[in-house]
Length: 525
Image (cartoon, rainbow, N blue to C red; front, side):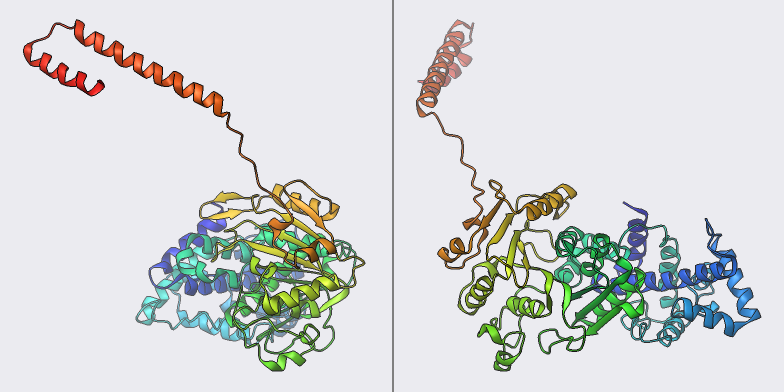
């Protein structure tokens, strides 16, 4: 268990008996985010005063530096930090200050509430971010003193996390850890806000192929969840600092999480355009830019949507003549994303296998996409790799204006490692998928390049087993040899029985035991 996991476990343990996991994650991650902003300000002030050090002094010294400047010239410090960071947290509201109060049992929950309110006034980036951190909830305690103690203990533990020494996606990793440990409470809806890192990496690397050097690069996720699927692409771009994030999310809590996640990863306010709304109900974005270099998505599977007739004249759907059924919005999400893809871009979307073979309206849409050559690859993933659902899923790769209509199939459904209650794709599995995708060559029992004619002959059914045969023949049984072996065994058993009865006859016995032996012999006769 990593240090991050230990501290999250300990802080969660304080809240676990008081509320559901889907609730306490809001407290934990909201406080982690606030700590990050506070500690970042301490560092920024120290850098402004002393230059960037090879090693930062303790936070006590950093706070002393900030306090001195604040007392000398408050307005100058505020303006400098707002210009440098985009916000300023007053010294009395810094997380480290609140933590010191907690250590001295001088903490008041009203101070934290005031800190959240003050930060929300620092600009639109922070408006409403902490709405889900309900410090008045009776689940924290029936009165203020109980609530003070609960939050005080959580703050003391979380303050030990070294956010700047952590390598990786701290919000994503924290969520993944919380979900895996407390799946009974949070796992049922975990897929709404988090895509496992392995799947994110596969999609991110594929959609970046051939576009690595583009600058600026615009990525769009119409069902962004925590935003981790968009963030992953940075490791595959030559100019990640020129990456612009565009995302939409219906759930307000999850939308706020994505905002936190992007800020935690150093994404400038000017480089993120996020919207809290229903992706399918009304098209967004409609102003420039509305076409993107990459579209990535892990939408809710087979969700309900209106499928109202008005959408037949919606530019996202009208050319297909049919709408995704009300009970399964999978193709509605796909067509929305595809509409917003640049002619030179690449789209990756995770969906349930049903989109590959279901008929009726979905069959019509799938056929048209295939006739257009839009579907470039179908990648089958193992079952039970997503939190909240054990069903196997598929990644569809789509492009516009392809010169061919063939489809490359990869069956990676058997490539996983079981970890606790989840299956996991390891680095070697990811590499295998990416290498196969790049080469686009047939691999026995793993990958197949299907021509359009082959797909048409299958009535446009894309079910992977039709194209990739993973059947393993059982070893042929030699009936003659098996019969001879069984005959020999029967003879051996008979001989052993005879030998056993002879031994009984040779024993010196009493009348009582002789009667017992005679009864035993009858069993073998």
